[in-house]
Image 1 (cartoon, rainbow, N blue to C red):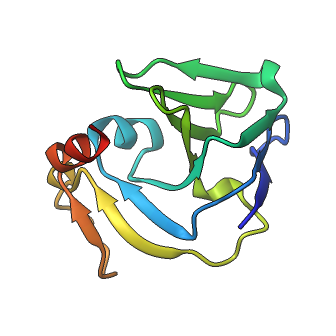
Image 2: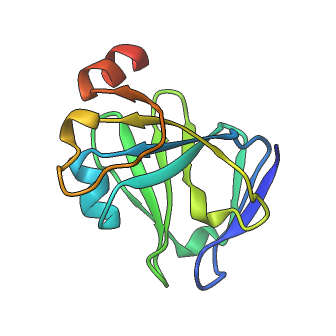
Image 3: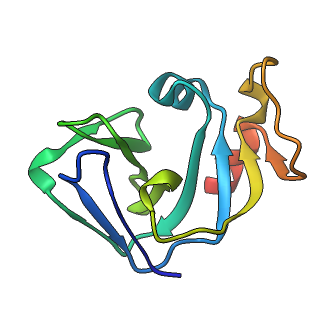
Length: 134
């Protein structure tokens, strides 16, 4: 499905040609520091357009990924895999998408004990994620 959305202040708009219907959660320590909890996100592939480029800040968070956020309001926009130019976009940006299937959790081995989801999901450790990415 196609998705359109914007950050909290509206300065940055995102248009994704294809938004996965499958929602995932990342429990890695970087995502938890970045968001204050797990990152809820969807795979949007490579066909993603951002309007308001001047308001986007990029943080080079690792050798293989970068994170984008709005400089004006601080909204988390995306997590981008550098090698594939693949955007994993924060779920909350897409106002027009009302249904997702919460089907996976990654870096489950870094999830703290103080929260848990009752949904039945495919869970992957950090090592399993890196093996899958190659």
